[in-house]
Amino acid sequence: MAALQAPGAPAVNGTFWLQPGSASTSAAHYDALMLAVTIMLAIAALAVLLAIAWMSWRYRRASRVERGHAPTNAARLEWSWLLALVLVFLCAFAWAAYDFASLYRPPRDAMPVFVVARQWMWKLEHANGRREIGELHVPLGQPVQLTMTSQDVIHSFFVPAFRLKADVVPGRYTTLWFTATKAGEYRLFCAEYCGTDHAGMLGRIVVMPPAAFAHWLAQGGQAPDMAARGFELFRRNGCSGCHDARSTVHAPDLTGLLGRQVHLQDGRTVLADPAYLRDAMLLPDKDVVAGYAPIMPSFAGQLTEEDILALIEYIRATGDADVHTR
Image 1 (cartoon, rainbow, N blue to C red):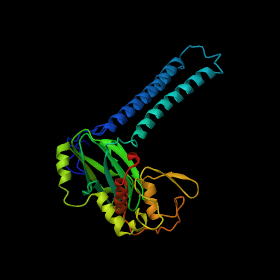
Image 2: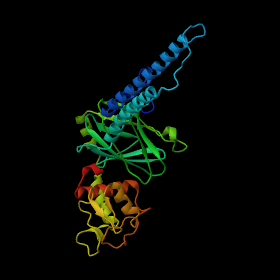
Image 3: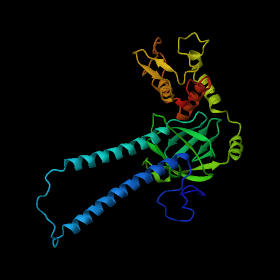
Image 4: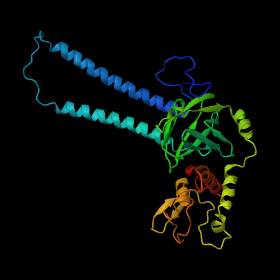
């Protein structure tokens, strides 16, 4: 399951492997963790088997070994064995938790890609406005950050060669990042049953050398980038009539909002991340900003998920307090 010629194609040489081909920086970390856990389990299983074999031989029926005076208390042995297992488990847990958490700490130079899943396709868009369906082109050796949501049901973005899998949930944003380490084509699956044609929800990740990717990205036509499209939506839907600094309506200023702390009427403080901005558009009465009346209408049913992501990118373009809120 390494480099492929097309999504869904069989392995190049048909050879069986315990692990699919590794093609990202995160894959090496997870492979090392899996190997370490497998070795520990094998050592434990071997120790138990050897103990069973030795006891079976030593205390066989024909053996004259002394069977009397069997110990009735082995607290020291039991506690030692229990604490050793707990320590090994905690070490493995800490290792796995560190690697898992690193998926949500993208580098500052990560290239943003926006993913909308729907029955039964993957719709992807780059920051410059170039769109793809069922495939994603990325540069070799450059971090890529995915911001994902679903238009209908729960899907799961799964790239075995990158060791990446994350649920894509309607009404929420899921973020992941990766750095591809080998040029080629790699399978993209939906790993969550999502309906009749779930098995056909296939795609591919195309990893290209940086120069070739830059050329490919520039061939996307004359479509406006996401921030420009978001600005057009901002004007077309009347948002500028209230949120523009020159407006006479008393509404929060959105300049540099993304990544800031927002104080609400009920006394809470929330982070203005993409999820907060999405809720502000669709559920404006949920988190009302302190000092403002709850007069904003809901845009539920008027904005698609692609529209919402474009509006968020426009707000990001006005100033970003923290790029890690992507």
